[in-house]
Image: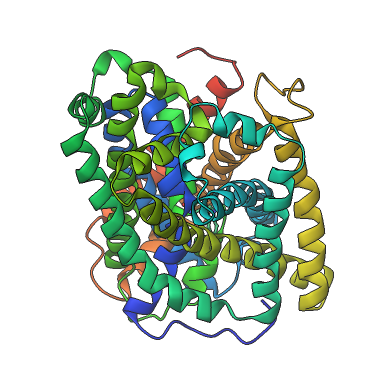
Length: 446
Ligand code: TRP
């Protein structure tokens, strides 16, 4: 961020920018498959509780740090104390690891968008299409490279404001379409109501510690927290805006979209493949949606429109992911913008190819029993983000003290959740995350 620090024009500007970065594939692709996989209603319940407690407190801490120091993550943590800069560095590395595999999924979206345009929709509805596609040698590579190159072009040309404008129109339409698809599925398909029950009614016997780990990783990912991004956002925020209110709005928006996406996908999976379908993993959206479109009158056109909108939602997020990484390269290695973007592009293509090949030519190779894309996803969401959140909560809780940030949080209006914030940051966040990390590493079994 070497240019002059501009600020968001008003309250709406901040919330929209933060929501634009938050709403993306995480809501539409990742949330539904995790909810399906981890027991439906119980996952939803755990997720909601974590949003209001963990999500709220961490986002408040990050935005307040950003607004107080007026810097992006590495600089902000260094300002708080030189020894804390390591948390900033871990945070900065996370988007760099997410961007490549995010773009691989972006490539899948592009493929499906073009597929519906060229009338391949019916073929895509078959059970084996998705598996056959991702295990093919060259096509997924091409779509991934196209997606990430478009992202890089926009970052270099600096036309992201234009894209943002388009996606501000697209986003409400996307939400309307998601609601329409959900209602259509539930009303017309046998068995879909069972799926709604699976999704909405928590079955406590399905609760396990893994549910919490998965829900927490998803929460960080979806709200774009625990990686320093919100520090940068906070640094652009004006002092007279209430951070607390803004967070509530972002959370309602982000969680609302994720909830609806689940309602669109999970009942349909139930109707098509019953409970066994729930374990489909990352491919779930791409397996289920073409089937729904196939059953709808005019489904071919709806498929085209739907994937165009998802493409824009994914693109705004991938642009802001790449922007973040590029600005770190610019600051740290004193590169100019074009050089930094091209470097990030090349590194991301190499890393992304590992994920792509993990499904095709290297499918025999797994790390900790995971395919490569799953591995990168696990590494960032289940390990690095919890570490970053732990670092942030310890630094705020015990070194700079919650009081310092509460002062900042009170500037733009009353901070009602003061006590929740203090208790979460000092005790609950660190204790839960340590337990989670220990269980992820297999040290303890919970
Ligand atoms: N929150 C985004 C989504 O739901 C993904 C994401 C994670 C992201 N980290 C980010 C987007 C950083 C922009 C910046 O799809």
